[in-house]
Length: 168
Length: 168
DNA sequence: CGGGGAATATTGCTGTGGCTATAGTTGCTC
DNA sequence: GAGCAACTATAGCCACAGCAATATTCCCCG
Image (cartoon, rainbow over all chains, first blue to last red; front, side, top):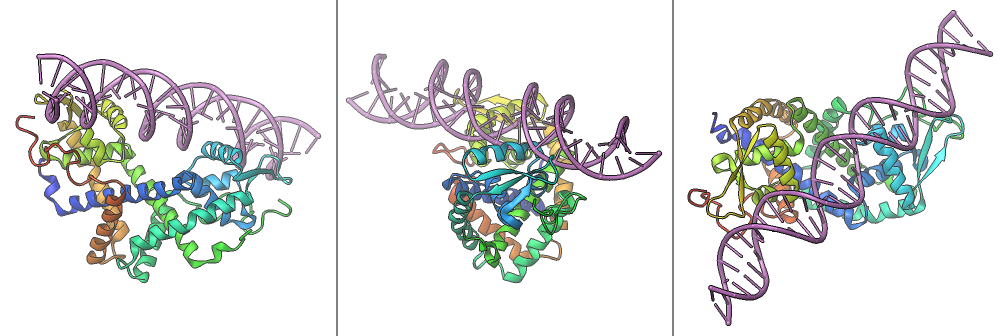
């Protein structure tokens, strides 16, 4: 039934997009692993490094990545074992703990980023105008927020959004 | 060390892109699962449905998706159990077996595609000109081929590329 | 106070997928 | 024709991540 749906050019576009998406994922993953990182580890490292003090509470880290809280627990376990991260208790709330990037972690990230940039340049150069790229990233971000809210700002109703809560 | 790398606008762009990429993946995955499919299951279904006879050898299916051959074995196991696919022995080569989409599988794909198209439209509409989209998809495909060759054509040196080898 | 509900991190269980070994098949060479 | 290398699919073992349950801590309302 419905044998020729795929002659529809829109369906072909879906195929191309899925294929392209898978290809980009594979490319990124390969580049991460050249530097001994998995995709989620890179994501974690980048999120932490973009945060004040290079640290984030476990819950916030989960909200800002594609991981669940239990996933964050285990990734941080591994990365702590590998010396890229360090756990730090929050003195003002003994439930919370912070994941902090170690110097080794920052160094690893620094080593990984140039190749990453190279992929992106090689990918976009001559294909998109900067304005179009900006618009596309905005569109993507909006789509993302519709599904995974709280990625760009603090996620909980507590307020470590600006400052990590005093000495925390 | 190197505390302020992330003030570099290029680094910000990397962050946005990674975030956008993760967001798009999450959006797609959520839509797949609305219809009881995982991302790889959708990929498999689409690949098979785009192939002549709605079928593909296990090896070729692996080459055209982001899965290994053992991964394909297990996904086909599940989808066969769910009635979306069917295994079919190849009479001319008793090593090979085909995965064929069942009517139920085609129906499932047909039900999933409209929502998928809706996401893509909602995502691109007003953001990109058709020419730019085409150029970007081409660029993505080139990047993909550099890492995961053999995705768009037959992958082995045998020749089921045009016709499924006689009665196969 | 103090008790109940919310929040936080972790652990057990399960499902999934990659890598490697394995068994069966094919084709090529001598 | 026999032997051998390549190919195909699968099974075993491992790593990884989500969901649900759990323990601890916090906060608020009485």
